[in-house]
Length: 104
Image (cartoon, rainbow, N blue to C red; front, side, top):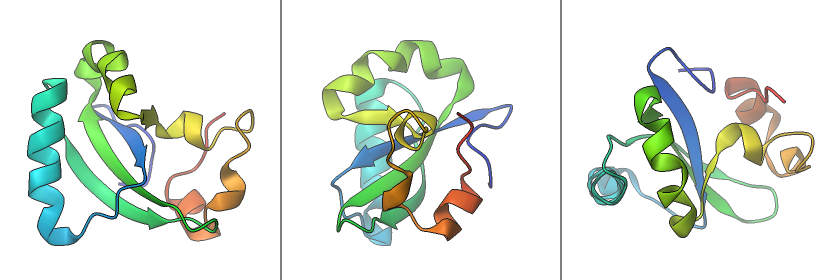
């Protein structure tokens, strides 16, 4: 998926987790349970400042119920992470920004 949102899913980001492919299922199960939603890992992104982010999808219909609980885990909406207002685009490669383009 090459967008921040589909008709069915919304892209989220959590910083500081170096997730290996064999750990995706555990991540999805844990956060899906904590947030009471379906979580689908999309990508693990290595930033230019040395940080690592996990990008994952949640169902659009669950945005409202996830909006507040996500904050205790440091989960952010991807569009907020790379918005011009937050000035974080500089940490992401052109490839990542092209694949998941900022909307604001």
